Image (tube, rainbow, N blue to C red):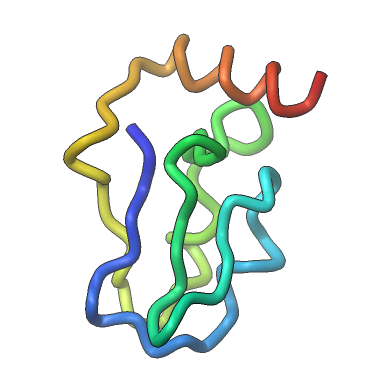
Length: 81
């Protein structure tokens, strides 16, 4: 699954530099995770780095992008080919 940032976002900017896929950008007013780039850090790390650094716990599963770990790994590989 890809992740999504909900309304609890404080726009602290902590998540942007830790994303290995550059999937997170500043929105207005919330940050946005591109579900086509988000692999939940599969292929790069053991767990989603953005969720680890988020002080407001606003990063959750995206209900519209259900993917297996294998699909996430394939997506990561294609983004970094």
